Image (tube, rainbow, N blue to C red; front, top):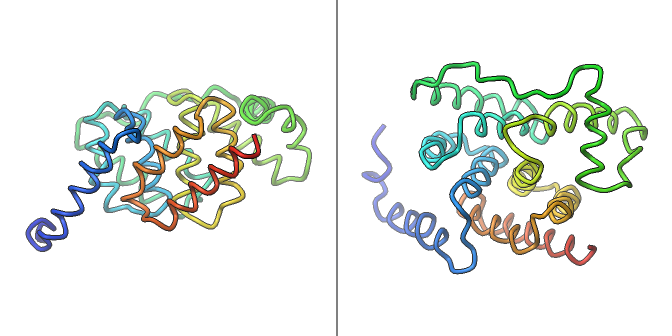
Length: 230
């Protein structure tokens, strides 16, 4: 397959100028590279951009994203996208990491056991969203799974902290679209633990080239709604 720079030079000139210069350097919308690449990797998972993911992941690793961080983004995506949509990204990451000489599997990051995952997951929900989540896991089996699996199995892992995990969750939801109630809720969760409104708008701005204007504008509306409800 010919390089896209050869087949579509005019398009690539404008796209690369916009995505890699104009957006990255927009005054007041900048993000430091580690945060920017975490957001973009999560966004590409959310919008199912597997080919672009293969292009971006090596750049992210070169910019300081560790193999553990990259894998944690992919693992956490399963709870928001499902394994059916995430498996190709896990396979791609494994291929890229092994090609770069990274030995797999990576060092384990789990901090919970099968016995305490529900308790620890519910505690994580409270820490991020507040006391209203203390007994949320009791409201049916889906909510119990959410506490034990999503939060107990993944949010409690090392490799990323809660602020980074809420950031990537925000990006998963914004990029896939159709999840505006959950996106608003997680925008509020982000704000509660220190990822404020201005930060989230910077995140949306940096991810816009990868998901387009409609979903970006929807995400900003959710951020504004969450801020109004604070």
